[in-house]
Length: 459
Image 1 (cartoon, one colour):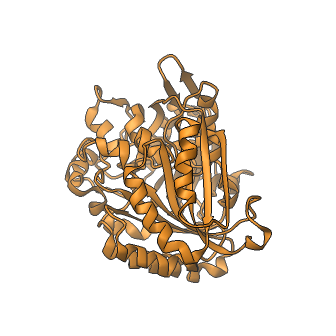
Image 2 (cartoon, rainbow, N blue to C red; image 1 turned 135 degrees about the vertical axis):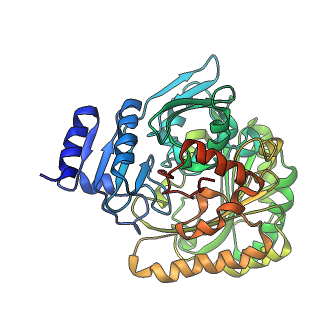
């Protein structure tokens, strides 16, 4: 019997969850991640049931040595949530949620997706900033910053984070908040998974239940008009308006004529979280940009708009992403979008320009690890396609698009939109906050146990 067999058998005695090794019938499911480009085979997956399991799993991983992946929603585009021959600490079964409607607070465990959290809070007419796709895990999205439909009115996800329970690299269980381990709390808010394993998130909620959704699809020959309108409009729009610009290959949306299905268009997708009548007036401004190929404007539950694109982004597709921040959507940037956006290769691929102004601008750049508080836009070029045979041409499209935007963008990008080959941008991603982050990394993870991420090296 090998040392590894002995240690995993002993480990099972201390774990309430499951220990999954390559001979386990659920191994292939446990090792798989959202991005089908990453087919990795860890030595062991520790499927944690509670914070006690996480403490045991971290200690085991530290003693074993080698790679350690933390799996929440497993949406990591670079495939960081699995590895070869190492340990995966799988949090996906930790899905407890408790809503305190009187205090407008929710506490949720790291296996929750935004669909889980939105469902729980919607019953009380409450919401907080999540992502654009509801199958995304709350943990990864929040630790990277947390951009979503509600950013302009409610701030980033990290701006609504009140506290976090964290297991550090040495196996300690700590509470991180403004009053306890404040340096760790500062670093968690944008620093990704570098500083420990979060076993519980406590968020502030806002009185948002039903919203007014608007999808406006325009012909490509009006793309310049659309982008210029969006650039000017979103700077001064009411903060209840969360809207982003996009290029897309039209799916079979029922509001589009059948002959438009599969065609390439530009679009504005909007979420109004205020009074419906006022939202209708704002939607009319978007409608007036150009005669749309098709549109859909309708009230709906907030969880519904957060799940609107889930079917286009299923688990297991090939993914390659790039992202950048920009203070302005310059004419040069618009020219780059007009060159590359219309070449969008698949119906699953997304090019979105998200607004990150409004409430997120009222937080100083040194108040959290997320440093780009002066940026107005966060662009993602998310290449998503089904066939591995098409990897080269899809990766090339993403890289060419990103390189064309680079002269018109800030040096850093949103860590949740970056791929594994973006490690050279780490310092730029955090600007003046980087040195402080390396010191906090040295304090809480001096050996860089948690290095499968957009990695911050210990000072």
